[in-house]
Length: 220
Length: 220
DNA sequence: GCGTCTATTGAACGTATGTTCAATATGAGA
DNA sequence: TCTCATATTGAACATACGTTCAATAGACGC
Image 1 (cartoon, rainbow over the protein chains, first blue to last red):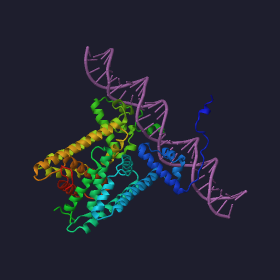
Image 2 (cartoon, each protein chain N blue to C red):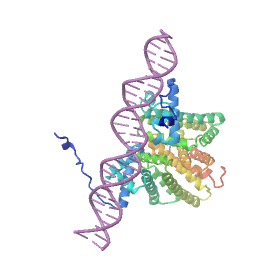
Image 3 (cartoon, rainbow over the protein chains, first blue to last red):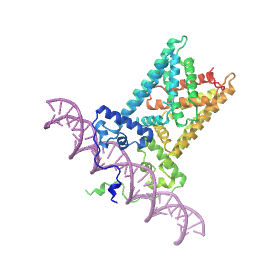
């Protein structure tokens, strides 16, 4: 039997499909995120990404100056999407500032966020920020966006409730830190605490900050 | 000029120095941590580690079954050292439980911990926990150790102060999360907040937990 | 001083990496 | 229908990776 008969995929050149640059970029970004989720950074090679996107190796460097530039784009995409989803959930609930903050907490401990594979992607981004300025820039911008959302809700809270004083900037940093830290630990070991306990922790810390984090800076 | 004269290191075989297995293992661990600090995971190769340790390539697989096993050992070493340093600082201060907790906070925002290169190493470990069971095991153990230290101090606090009730297990998880999250964000962008603000955030959150995280579980 | 055990070496292997580039196919506008 | 800018291909390149293993050298009991 001739060996050629065993070749399942006829080794001729692949059918070329011409797409709009935007569609191709999106496909590459999606494939990148899939790879980072399922294989981790160390296994996410240009070749694997291109295989996922049903595209040849050379195309990445046609659309992006380097692999890192593609990954930076993917970072921006997933970070914006995630914050957008949280904000949408808050808007959906509405209500007073305190209720909107609670909705934000609950959304932050919902399955969309509490996804170990998502953390895996994020850890890759954080690690890459050290060697890629483009990725560090995306981190800085998206982190500022997250802080702005939290600070906005805290400002509303102070405005709505009388007799409260709070350093909203610092409070936002604290809540973001608490949310991120609990996110990391839950994703690395989901048996440590339940999502409901995570929400309770956020509520308790928010109360503490409202009482002991006044704008003037000195702890009472 | 003959090119041989430019060769600075005569290419003969390296002088062999026989050491005790423990000393070699320590040297390999130290070299591994140096590489992870300075070059990141993706650049930390067996060859680079061996170069740092002034040892040939083959030696790693003489002492360790694989590169991952070496890294798991390095993780355990640095995690134990770090928690040990924090505990030592707490012991040095002594005092009541509340004062010891404050000392722990301050130590957690001291330069030894607030070191971007150290976070870089940690992010590598967290990321590797996904594909290496050995590293995941080290994470679980060392995280449990961290929780035990915090929970112990919280238990003492409840015992010493009357009229307080606190779910110490959950409180420890919250403090660990807050500390980790703030640690990540500070190391990725040191201009976001000052170490002193970090400590203030921890104190405020601890107060909130003491008021609103009772043992029975229902938020009052 | 000899023999033995093992710590240590470094070449070799097979595989993978990111990027480059000449060649080629495609589809929109003339 | 023809043209042509360009989207797309995949072989090629240089380099790097983790691991293996036969050869070798240092230390210790005798």
